[in-house]
Length: 221
Image 1 (cartoon, rainbow, N blue to C red):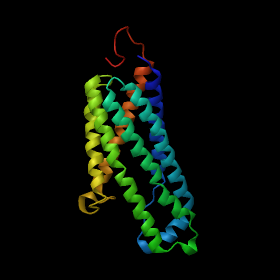
Image 2: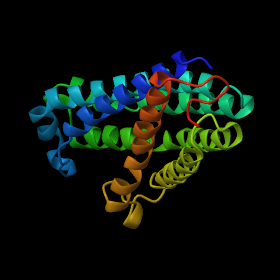
Image 3: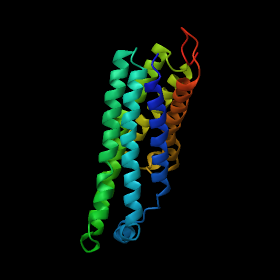
Image 4: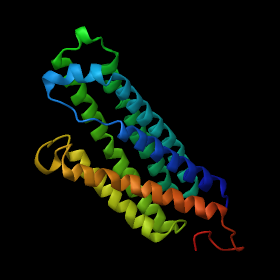
């Protein structure tokens, strides 16, 4: 079994998470509509750094899903679905940073509260809907893992949980109140699930790529 795709998937997955965490550390509590222009002016540089971190994190995740497709190649259709859905989902995450970057490019004198609110809402909707293909990606991963056993079975079940979490997050674009409030506690619980899966899967793939493997035995068995 070729170890290169496992190594690339493991390294790229962990690198993407590091970049994503760097972006999350730039997060600041967003104010009300009337205060948004002043908020953007004050934290312009931080917002740019945050968007760049998220953009490059999503770009590296494209490498992750490409390599994972090779790892799961024995399950042809699920691996293809995983790759296609992951490419769309993480590509949408890159595009979802466009509204925030647009906010930082507009001069303060033309950045009216209505414009700021519109761009903020647009970015939220784009990033939230990106969870739909990501949910499909995790569902395909779960099926492929259970079918091929090239990864531990529990990672397949964990992927199914991540798929369900991403699917629920999509609903917050349509019902952004109550439990599904985008800045509520449910979102803060659901979002990290996919991140934890990527960290766990990446670590497992790296471990399987470097440990000695007995002839005729899967590196994870």
